[in-house]
Length: 209
Image (cartoon, rainbow, N blue to C red; front, top):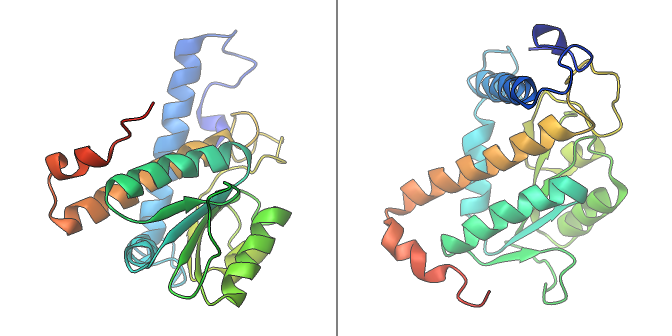
């Protein structure tokens, strides 16, 4: 779906209902495109099966480190919380208690452009340390994607794209929304693989708030 398929920002006169419909339509189209690519429907062997490959990488990790800038980073923090609830050892890059990444670990990243300097540098450091990288991006041919062992490509605008071509939403809104959904989907798949029920996860929820 392109913005042409939805009401344009100039036509909705500030209606929240219209804006919500646009967001829902764009997210639905983005998720459908990711699923189609995963199934090989876009004739790309590079993306077929990447959803489970992405989850497998996280599942096999000794520890998971998450790293994203701005709203993408906030979206990944939500994923980090859920993975912690599942019992994984998870660290957010930049926190003072985050240890050094090492062999056997996975760096989970998100960058719309795939060129965010700090994210790319962290990915290089992770690879040099023997860790593996999982990336969510809009750019399959980006430096971040090149460093990653598993890549999920989201058909959305990055925050520098203000053309309205890939999304009618402001900046990287659609990308960031999809990052949240992909993170929840990975968590849900790993939860079901684990065989644990909700009562087993609940004691890991924070009790210092």
